Length: 167
Image 1 (cartoon, rainbow, N blue to C red):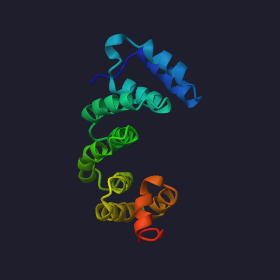
Image 2: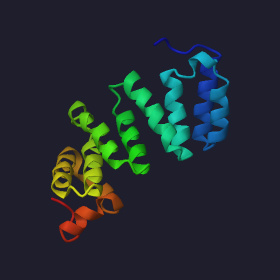
Image 3: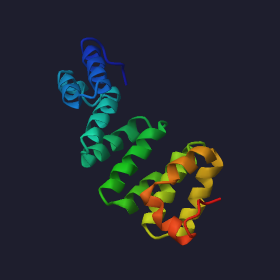
Image 4: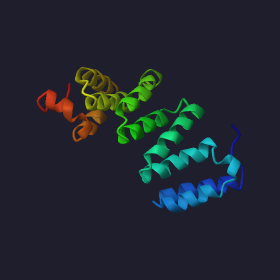
């Protein structure tokens, strides 16, 4: 896809600036100034998904993330964000299934097996949870330990092992 051109790039940059200042409403207003036919451009969608996430508009995040996974399949962030939004919508099985292919595509991204562990725990599949958690630890043990300490999604795992962090 062709890069955006001025003045659309000016509006995109302004939207990013507004997000940096914590103002999602102004960021969204800037995106609305982009040429209508270019509002589905991946660069615009990347900013839009951030606006939706900050507003907790999870259905919109899923839709945008679906598009971004198609448009930019080599970016792991959109795979993770889609599944996270699905999980928050109480569609955890779907979140798991949508993220599963990413585990093979991005073996060095700890967040993917970690989230699969969380979803497995929430689905009551504790042996699977332990496997995914072990894979996440193998990628980045320190970061995973820090993330896991207070993660309520992993409570079923901690309950099953007597509250000890998985080794």
